[in-house]
Image (cartoon, rainbow, N blue to C red; front, side, top):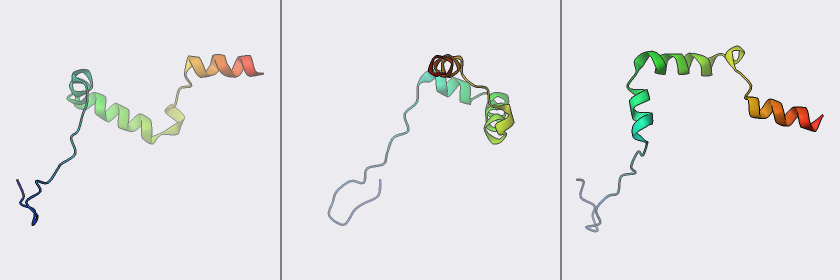
Length: 58
């Protein structure tokens, strides 16, 4: 723990994630696939919910 000059303990932000997310992130192949998908817009897949909403609006 770092000491502050006024004796106030420093606060460090916590990283919060679910156990499910942590398990997924421990899979290096999955992480690589997600990063590749995010880097290449041609791999994007429109969600079914968005397609349905757009169909109703036209």
